[in-house]
Image (cartoon, rainbow, N blue to C red; front, side, top):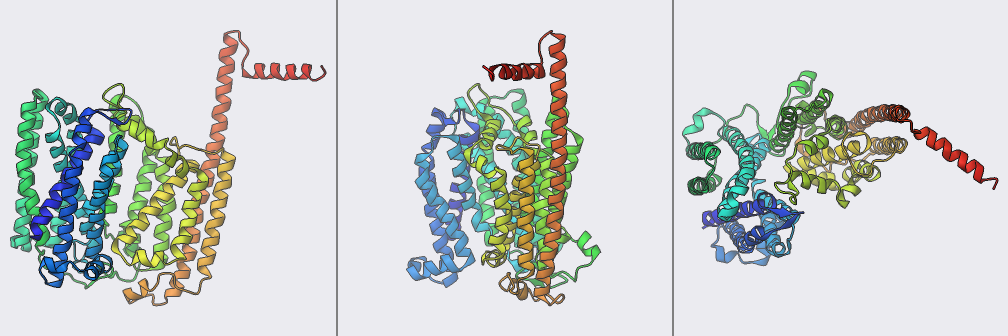
Length: 605
């Protein structure tokens, strides 16, 4: 019964992803409003969302029945359901799944624009991915790598399979129109599916000796089917480049759809099959989900690596998109400054080292390295990425609409950039408050203890610092066209204010006599550095130093930009004066002097 519920939940969620993707990105739209073809497809959302909600509730009750070892009909108890949903990790993530499905049922009738479809697509992905947050046993090692790979794998599969479902449901008149754009989504999804599936299989198997286990055989069967799907898609893609007829596309959808139905069945079986036991040299700390590292040394900090699969996938995606943008510009004949690419690469490297490298490894076990990693992630990495101008690159290379009235992907980006939410968030003062005040909210409340108690709490903490730092430095010293940019003197004042607030935070933390982690580091029981309060004060000192230095660099960069801006303005005025002189017309300075003379003559009168 539970396998049937899981299959229905997975199939309906994938179908919702495909339908919403088709409505938001594949079908025609006029200034963001849905057209007839999208409105017809929208009618399918409500029944599919209802199936997803009912099957998700079935999964919830079935899992509860397995845990308490009772028939599913005997689980209809308020106290039992409430305890499972609010106290057990599996129950919590399944509850997120149910809430997302019910939200879709309620919100589907209200969408009229592609932006609403994108919002529902985000809710669908949250509900779809939530049950996989605890899909890997933390005592098996490499917990965050395995979970991140699973999430990337399911995300990419949903886009791929769902996209095929969406194409199949589109009318023949619109299918070829949408197929060209879907092929780009399918290509990126295919790469993500192949890479995440291969790495995740190796992490779970542990060694080639386990390939003959039931889990290994199911994994091989799923991989072979994915390869077969890729070959089918590649064959039809080559044929469509020559013919591009609807008959070939329909056959492709039918064959891939049948193969993917089998793949989803295998995915459900894999989820219900325990991977083989992995033998490790060191015992796995269940809180960390990996082995406790030895005492830190320079070489261990420099060479250590324990990747967070989801954050690593995010960085790889950013790098791939950036490279793609540079390649598009180069093919177009435009030049992209090399120094921007270097700054972007440095920012990504710092972020990778702070999360996945040796610094990230020790940030999970000591407060001092935790503060260094988060300051690097919130200051150094965003400075490099902001100087890399990724938003400018995106606006110059994203595809435009396919018609005169269609916004296209570039139109989406511009709409988001100029929305009222973006104007508020990118206001330098608001960005500074989010950047600095969030540290007080995190470390001087129970929020830090709560986030550190979950494997993904640390990830969301890192993601918050990364995004908040980028918004702040992009608003202050970035090259991108951020709304509400202040004059340079005001930016310098904001930077100085940020330094002052950060210094006050660090001093407050250094003078604290209470541990702010709520017992997290004590529960780790690390065999070195037993003085936790001294470690906390050292972390506050490190955070002060490593936070102030990048802000000083930002201050220097802002001052240099100010000087260059004045130089460019002076050069512009001089060029205009020369052109006006050559044309026998007064320049800006002559017109301004004439204006002053007119005021001087009017005053005595």
